[in-house]
Image (tube, rainbow over all chains, first blue to last red; front, side):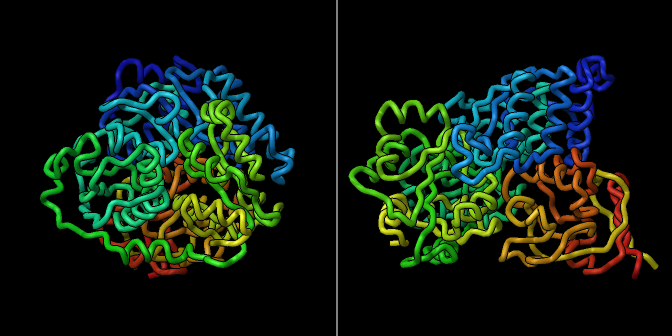
Length: 410
Length: 137
């Protein structure tokens, strides 16, 4: 790889051991993807929950912090794994909370802003068109690439941290124009209605697209979706397909026409009602008892908090069914001021702040609370939690709240 | 006569191990019980099987970014594959393997690696040379 004078200085260790580790890590990764040089990035966003980090990951980050490492660009964080104001009632242990505290302390020492959100594009500072960034969390990356027109690969926690330390990342993948052209073309017969439907469509496209290096372009969406709809669409696509970028004709900024992304050269694959039903079929559970209803993955926007609160008003959950809602601290303060949190709590729900359910030691909290059948409107979360011992089911937001009230899937 | 498979330059050290193969995908978060060291996702073709110390041969990476930290965490406890071979890696697995010093290769010239390598094959992986050798055939 071609390196600038500054990058060579980092590699020689003249700017500290942390930046030496960071650029060495970036060179190893860049070599695997044939990067020719580095590209400067304006922000970094790091996914790092304590379940993923473990003792080894926390020690690693503490080692960097103890050595005096400081990030050189604005760097923010994905949801935490432990809500430190509410972990014992969830069945999380002091050891889990201890790991979380140590990690937060190390990050703060390095100058990382603990934003603890996977919807930073709705709450913090959305990237702009053409902006090179180093983002973690697949939902953040696909939204930023597709809806904002920014440029990021999936940057796992170690690589996002490396980018924060060096202020750059290897130029490969979605930093390159040619990697952003469409490779798969899909036509939608009907525009989805609610957030669950958008998630199912995204999941279906992701599963058909088939991998990180595929770029789907979607035709047939009749009206501009909302930010929340595209959030669920992209998060589900990334979850099922490891897909970091999509184009939507007439909606996303790199794709005013199908020709803009080379889609006119591709054969069209219609997404049929049967395709969507096939995706949703494993997550049907009508009539079965439900242990926990979860609104998360991605964290809820203020608009979603208002929608859940309105559905909860004047109702009460079943004694046998818990309701968990995850939102970032940036949203929580407004949601509290506007009375949304009070409505959800009066229903018997719990709002967790700065976390996301599946990143919270999901297996352990499921076992501790006796949660097996889980219901959500998030196509992403039901895809993840089967491996954690849950029986996940899908329903739209209205049906989720109604199911929590009845104690079984309506 | 050993069979030599050329692939793209990968990351990690030269290692040798027995192959565990499936035409399925890989995510450390979605698919594994990382404490017990087995595939835990019921729908996965390797459900219930141990991945410890094997050369894991699968199709592609899926899911989220957590695998990057998780490979490092798994390696630290020694409950980890010896290497991962894929038709197509994503960035996350490359980044995680780089941190963990875990051997990872992809893009095999001779075709689908899940067909080229069979379960139980004795495999030597040389990521920096872009080479995988099946020693028992």
